[in-house]
Amino acid sequence: MAYIRKKQPRLIVFEHTNYVNLHGKDMTFLFKLFGGIKTLSYVFDFLKKVDYLPVNQVKGLRAKIYCREKQIDNLIYKAGRGGGWIYQNRKLSPHQLDAFLLYYLWKTNKYENNIK
Image 1: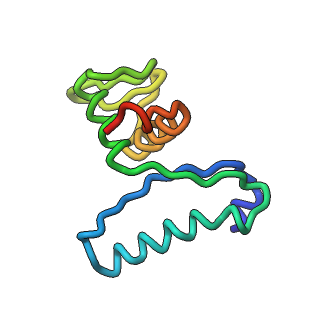
Image 2: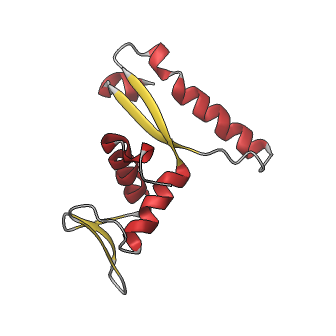
Image 3: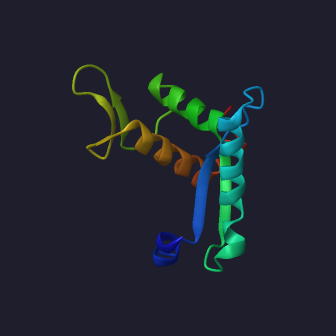
């Protein structure tokens, strides 16, 4: 909470999953976390929007880029040793890639039109 107050973000976008067939305490905790994130805008007046995208849309975009069916400027996948995902000549971890693709989808609104 102190970190959020210090940084005062106006926007939070996160991946949401709906694996309802996987019951158990871990999924219950995950759904509670999603609910907590969605209510942050009621607690912090500087936070103007909390939004989410389904996880399968982010995975779908990654697969399309990997198979070269879709392209994002300056984002490439290099196969082999020392390869991986690279954006603007910087290597991305899998988590950074997911965050980048999530924001890309949200910002361009392509998740509503083309990504399945």
